[in-house]
Amino acid sequence: MAIEAATELESATAGAEHAHTAAWIATVLRSRIAAGELTPGSKLSEQSLSTALGVSRNTLREAFSTLAGESVVTKIPNRGVFVASPGAEEVREIYRVRRMIEPAAALWGEVTPEVLENMEAIVQRAQAARDVGSVPDMADANQALHSAVVGLAGSESLRALMDRVLAEMRLVFHAMASAPDFHSHYVDRNVLLVERLRAGKREEAAAGLRDYLDSAEAELLGHLASEAS
Amino acid sequence: MAIEAATELESATAGAEHAHTAAWIATVLRSRIAAGELTPGSKLSEQSLSTALGVSRNTLREAFSTLAGESVVTKIPNRGVFVASPGAEEVREIYRVRRMIEPAAALWGEVTPEVLENMEAIVQRAQAARDVGSVPDMADANQALHSAVVGLAGSESLRALMDRVLAEMRLVFHAMASAPDFHSHYVDRNVLLVERLRAGKREEAAAGLRDYLDSAEAELLGHLASEAS
DNA sequence: CAACCCAAATTGTTGAACAATCCTGACTTT
DNA sequence: AAAGTCAGGATTGTTCAACAATTTGGGTTG
Image (cartoon, rainbow over all chains, first blue to last red):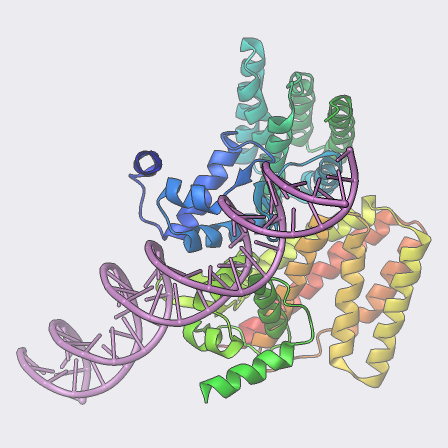
């Protein structure tokens, strides 16, 4: 049975290149965690996973090393690796980062017409998602917008950091038993943000962003606190 | 002969804990690269290194995975891993990052008296190093100050990013044939920066920092351009 | 019911093996 | 002599099997 599952999983991911197994496995696990198939806190056994993915334990371990570096996964010596399970402190850290780099990018980044177009398309997508009531689409659009904001900085490293942070945010939501309507009230603020950027009101945009992030953090922490685990 | 070298190197690093070999090896390589013992661009052969460090090739590979994630090392498929060798583009990226997070931390970070004390001690160290003419000490103090600036943000992730960036800066200097007097003219600017922070003039501090970083980047790029490799 | 201890499972690490890929240097060809 | 090519040797990529060290889960005992 383990074997059948193995070939099944393997063929499910086939079609893409043999792009050097360890890296490949890392991307597979990354997306599977992001999709919520592997829930926060769950253990990733070397034996099960290596047979399930059809790779050797050594190769899997290599993938674990890179994922641990991205803190997608937490490695506890002699205990194993677990899907990262961010709590209140991690949420605070997430917002410490966002409260620095997002306003900084809004203030000092390079705002080009193309990026503005893109942002406007994104907020429209968010509005459409809200109208339809699709929470996942709204969350996606929201994250896409903030990713685009950081993109103003033009820095690959900051982009990567922001992506990591947003991935951790997704884990926070995955870890929550009841997903509240966290995104809908922020859609309008995002519209306002883009308008300010378009108008060249950088400082207002940055200040609004900081305010936005404070609210979002407070709300998220409130939800976390009310979920006694 | 390979064996003797192995035991020699191993005993050189002994005394510290056997703290899970792969991670341990990663730190050894990290510091050896930071110290300039392993020069940028040089190849890290799996066979040589594994025997030299007294670990198996598999374990070494695990360490490589984490170091590649930190971009301390560059992995080229089927070719091997090399000590990262940052060029002009990487320098630009470094300053893109610094130009965002340092002024942001200066503007919005939490400036406590203790941190100010620490910063003042650091600039004094820099001044002393300049008087004595010790370039390494000056470089260290300089980096320590800017690390402390980012520390104002109170974010572990940003700290980590800044540390990575500063490590990459060291690699840039290690890669340069002739090390110019890059630091001495910036000592005074750092003094001014700390004074502004002490005086609570956040915006001036941030603006000054951005200016500082522009100058430093330009100078560094100039040096790089004049070194035809 | 707490403390202990043993056996089973899991991680940590190694060594050897083999396929796939690359590099080198000699050999051809023009 | 310059350029192309082609074996073969070296290196990386990956797997497998094994063993030590550690954790885990019971079961026994006081």
